[in-house]
Length: 60
Image 1 (cartoon, rainbow, N blue to C red):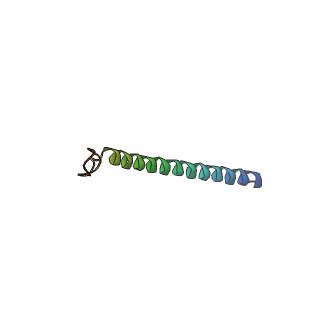
Image 2 (image 1 turned 90 degrees about the vertical axis):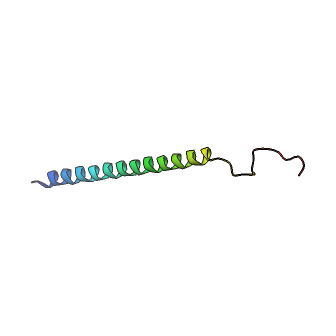
């Protein structure tokens, strides 16, 4: 192979590696956002603890 061909192959490998890294970061971000959404929904749907926020005690 010529030096030009070897250079082209190396450039293509570098580009492929870069694209794979981007795909992995995107997937990791998607998984983290799914976890955050699950935690947010769990907190929003959790019942209020006894004695907090359901009624106003005007005698207090």
